[in-house]
Length: 388
Length: 81
Image 1 (tube, one colour):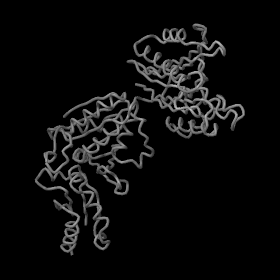
Image 2 (cartoon, chains in turn blue, yellow; image 1 turned 60 degrees about the vertical axis):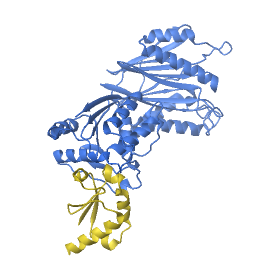
Image 3 (cartoon, chains in turn orange, cyan; image 1 turned 90 degrees about the vertical axis):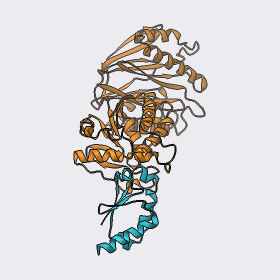
């Protein structure tokens, strides 16, 4: 099953506290919806306009209203400046279905950039006038590794009056993206690169709000986490097999759990002393066939703490290099890249956890996992929990 | 000689980091005879051993402190000679 992952960044018009562009995502049972709007002007008024536009569109679509009806409603609602004849806010809607079918509707934003198999792709479109507004509709299939970039005109005009006489321009931006995608397939890296360059072209004083949304289609990424030994040691083999055969990232969370899997698979756990210096949580290690082996409850507590600081997205926490992260941070990053997270939670408890010498706030593993699962669901992840 | 320091949950909470620190600061003349590794849980704490726990050539030592660590290493070296 395909899944669209996205990453967006914005720059505020110089001197403004808020961005006049807004981005909103949503989902229906069989699709993901991404909406971007550029409010006329900049600052608080523009911000309110763009927020209203994206909220109305994404809410209507999530409630099952068809995209055509949504467009008809919003175009009736959107005012147009009587003096300049331009809309009070623009919008671009991208709807990606689970089978890869994609619909893009663009009103007054720059052309959407699409890359198919690394090459610029110009899908055919239909142009209609709805409630006096010219709307372009594109339909095509999004495949693994394809990219879509939605941007506000602040990006297209980057450098205007500064480093580039006529602004960056959509054609040059398209070519730049095509070249960049040869060097990296990481959507965050690509968007960050373009935003930084835009900021540079503006001399770090953007003359307009800038928003760039990068969308990538990938096979629905999944992660499985095995934490805690099964209550009945006779079922160790069964769960170890389930874990190792899982198609996705694999995390072992717990030393005893790691020992069980190590014994069954014959693969050793290697803990790199140098990589674990200066960590506030116990060290983590590697095992062949597994992405990471961490300690158990303290690591889960640390991950929970990070996730509870995330308001809307796991990208709220800035972590740079995976290799320099501790066990909890690596676990966080692996989960961030996944749409679906499976837990195998062993119910065997180490009796020493009740020792009064240990911190009183040490929660039982299953409580911590329940809290983690709930936080992850809040952030849009699908969770599958299995106890053993 | 193989020295393993357990870095599991309870050993970590009850002093493993200070053992690791003590080992790093130890006299190189003692350290050169040991190959030190971190180990994931010996499961010894469930069998009445008191954390933090280390093993030397698979022999377990419990309730280790930074002070007693040095003593244990020297004793093992002398036994081995």
